[in-house]
Image (tube, one colour):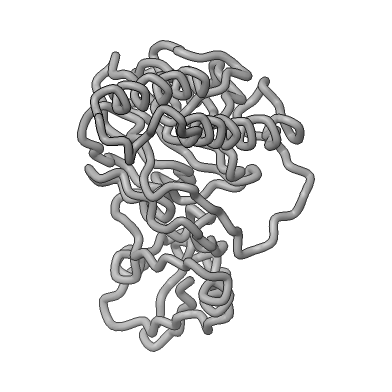
Length: 299
């Protein structure tokens, strides 16, 4: 695929030369065109040949890999561009977010689509998994050059197979309702070394397809679904430096004082967190009695 782009580059550049009579662009005796083409091809070779993202922890038999390495927080993820390719060919409507949902962790976001809509790779990478999983149904997992993996679930048809190289915008298959899906949608996950990351912390799912920052430092907060609600977007605080992320991790936890009429449901809504997170942080049960004046740790 990269070679195709190189040939297109050659053709477009040649056409531009032919239409532009000015000797200031590319004169017959100039070697600038060849130099530019060689530089472009070299950049492609450098990216695809020197970085083998399939050399470690490469398993095409399952969606989730058990990495035997401990990840240190904050996690640093870099993007080479400021935009991504939309995974669907229509406006992105999120119907369920990363967070706690019906007593379970929802480790991705659900994007509305119509069965049969084409799905596309969001970044360059290599297909690690293209198979059926009981919950996810027909699923494609793409590993990218920055260590991130994107998971596209509930497909109705595959368009790629394991070990295929893809570029941003490559066709991956058709959306659908396979697996445990209520209605047609794309279940999209983003994982780094096996750790789920809230996709909305990394990307803005608007019509501009914007990446939130080229350098993003991820704290543990954005890898724990129980700290978020699947019904609403969590308040975002993007860290573009390691210092900012570490300072956030060292902050004193927020303390909420129970008021008259409070319930765990009301407190969770007021503080943009889940009941499960409140219970875990305060070593209590969902049916525990709240006392007026009681102090609760809110993570």
